[in-house]
Length: 221
Image (cartoon, rainbow, N blue to C red; front, side, top):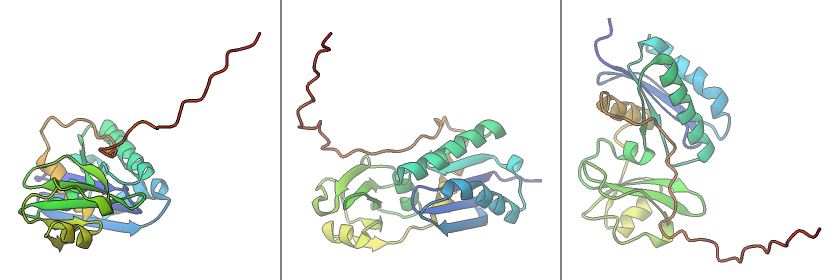
């Protein structure tokens, strides 16, 4: 009989499809497949393979952790929609976990976690036990002064460049992404978790377009 919470974590926020099954502190099974497309078709078969490897079924799950981004918009929607549907059908909580938090999880001290964004930009957030700054979208060549604080360990996208900018040290995530998502979700079982939703981050300096609006001609009748 299963005594420890059985938590499934999965993620399709980038060019991959990944899942892990966690029982207590033990990883029963884990898969990570690189793929640029096809996550929607591959996600459920991959999860079923992970469950089978862990000698578990859907109805054994205690909770679901899902990567909520930031990252690829379509990929995030795939996994978040899947998690919400599974939670509804299985009667278990679905808990959204950001990629930035998952990368930082398990690393002590000040951590700068970064994820690749389009057009030579990155999503970046500082962690120090708890989020110390909100996640922001910034250009890699214009990293802000108020993100670091202390001597950070820099994890994720462009870790070397980020470390050089903030006099930090590049490092690796303590856990594979789906495992970190599952571990964070396990810690939040029983809390008031909102349904997972995609984490879309806009640039802090986003402004309305300067282009003049089109002229609307009156109808001529």
